[in-house]
Length: 239
Image 1 (cartoon, one colour):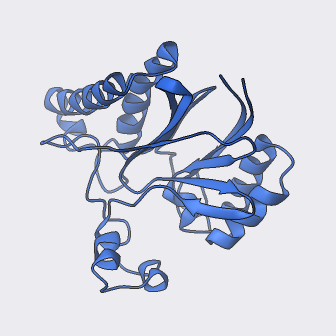
Image 2 (cartoon, helix red, strand yellow; image 1 turned 90 degrees about the vertical axis):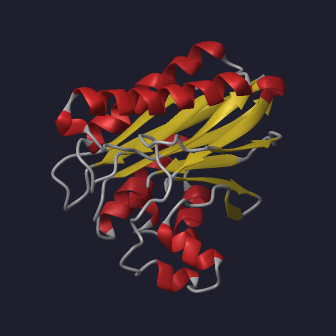
């Protein structure tokens, strides 16, 4: 059994009129969905995806086939809503999260450019790879990480919920380590704060809620050009 604490925070930011991010936070299941602002009903898409996946909290620890199936159902639900309502046609959302699966292992989940990080032993590691046009350029060696932050296509997502054919989620399994912290966040955080800045806040904050609050506050203070949503999870013990 994994014994953990978590904290969460969200903010609409300085420029957006509505918050298109949604999240779900419970012991063993933490999810962030970022409705895509360039498509209709992004806020609806993120809420529907989280509503579909939140039912997994009743199945902890989660079987991997069940996790994959509910992600498929979330995608189907977004498509169905779009077919029924023209105003919602084409809506989509990212999905990133952390879940406890069979054998008390972590499952790191990703579709899109929301992210999951791990902080331990003074080191911050990005566990997910962005599904984005800019990341493809970085992977091909055509763009470096610094230039990627300013690239005009940095917000173009290449994989999301609400598409046909359905997206294939990245799901990576990890063994738990006492004392580690995880951060699940929308790109409103990572577009404003550097990895070094994120690591410093995760190191200094006394508890996960304080860390979440400070991360969001700093992202808004740094510009707040998008909605900002974060979940911080700390593993205290195993047993």
